[in-house]
Image (tube, rainbow, N blue to C red; front, side):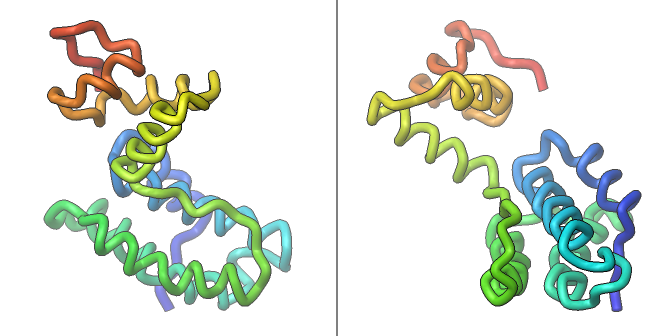
Length: 152
């Protein structure tokens, strides 16, 4: 059975913090691991959540250890299927993070409905380096001046 311990998971969260797909993937794994620790004997002792996260751990390890080609959103979504099934069967309430592109589109909808919160604006500013140069709407709301690019 494939296994990533707490240190491995936290390392992935730190390394992939600004990655558009692996960032949310590693945060989802951390959320699952923390939920498991709070609701059982622990991540290392309950095999069901670890089995559910196998594809996600392999995805993270593949990129980190072997430097393989860029991970796609489709691969991430496929790795989430057993985790979502586990979450449903167990009645778990941990957060599954979405890829940055999906989150940006969610924020766009909130902007257009004129119901964006201060917290969402701060989140958008943190994601500004993922916004494409031509997306004037999101760049403007993220506080990026015309002709400038955010660091990251």
